[in-house]
Length: 374
Image (cartoon, rainbow, N blue to C red; front, side, top):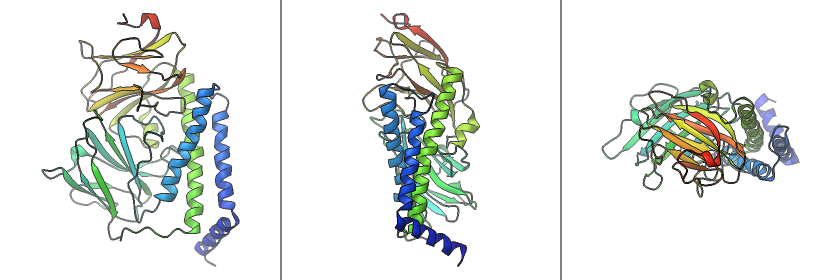
């Protein structure tokens, strides 16, 4: 019996016996220890959000590794959105991804729309999991040839192609698309479809081997992702609470970051009568934003609360700088960021295609001493 045949038989036996499902559930159960670990918040809100976070990760990972896992018939889907949040997800972003493979060539057809920023990246395994993903290629709209109506095509392959080409490597497994709004109310996202060149567009029928491997990957991502970002959060809290130091570019790229973005990740923690004041000069840049997250590095609910501010929505000082105020109640000043009932969490400041990366300055003040408060 060949090694491949033996592997198929093992997957068949595991699925038929229920072992595949049993191990999937066991790994999800183990992920609960991340929420209960020493150093994790113990108040009811953070604990409840932690377990909801695991349910969201489970939903997203099943979409990725079971429903849309076939690189022979890739599907662009939204792995991160309003109710599935990972690693300081950007409230201004419309995220999409698709399963691809360095064994094949692909074509993306698109219509640009009016959204402010659009980019594409090809990644290896490890995004939001091991933190050791590598990017094979990156292409953003500024470098894409389009017709007068904003229509374009991009070829994805390991071998260089003429025109709009997005490089892949043999170990490439994922396409990541980031579309970034300045104003969600008026901008229209790009319309995109992806196809495998030479394929018929039909997925491979589900096999025991695919289910066995997919459930293992899905539960593994839940455990690895929750562990990775919990460790980040605890490190931020221990080393630079209520500060915003520049984040290590190599670490952000290993987690699937955008090379055009300079990140400032950190932790915030405020007493009921305190506020965090953030002040920064604004360099020439494509865009920028600041957002507030919970301990698990999920953006707070931007659908209903003002938990972030960007280049378009910010109110500026006379000198062009910006002052942002994080507080539990509305202090009646511009750029107030709502903590939405949280006492602590993570936060992120981004410069996108900035000419410079000035250091945002932070200070904690009594609520009554917030600058500009009447």
